[in-house]
Length: 108
Image (cartoon, rainbow, N blue to C red; front, side, top):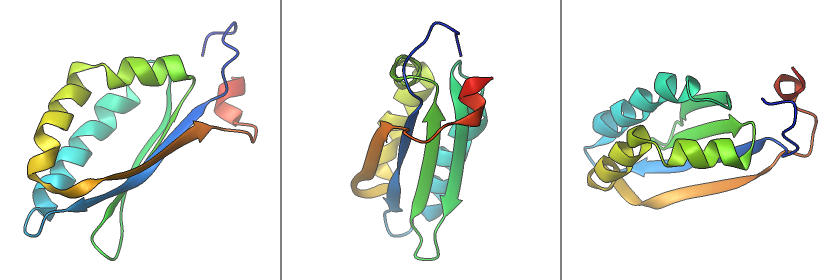
């Protein structure tokens, strides 16, 4: 993170429910995001979890809104968003917000 950046880290998290019979495809789409997203400038954390009920939980932390915006504008995320509707039931249950607790990685 640039020392002059004053934005608080941004957390983005939510649940994605696969269409019946599409859990494997959605899992792979999500897994294909993990390592490339971790390599994007400003990424502090990027994790994928699979719930017992079959939903996927995605948790991301970005150094600032600017970093998240650049990630969201990337070809990687654009391709993911194009492929997502074929494998997902409904819309993502997504949340985001500025972190108010101290984030150790942001201080480094």
